[in-house]
Length: 82
Image (cartoon, rainbow, N blue to C red):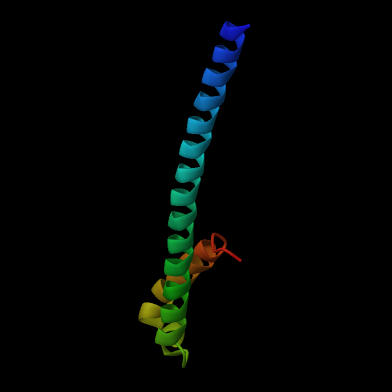
């Protein structure tokens, strides 16, 4: 009986340690995702601020490049936290 209690206690301690490690890793990843979402938001705001008058998009020489940058930003916007 004492052996069974010792085994159960050892398994419980191991499960608690594993759970604590998983929670810590999850919190680190949540912080990373929040930081990435914030960076995406800042890039989107800056891109909007740069072309608030529509001058870049109307320019033939740089318009295609700016359009591509906006397409990339729209793809990144899909990864923001809502």
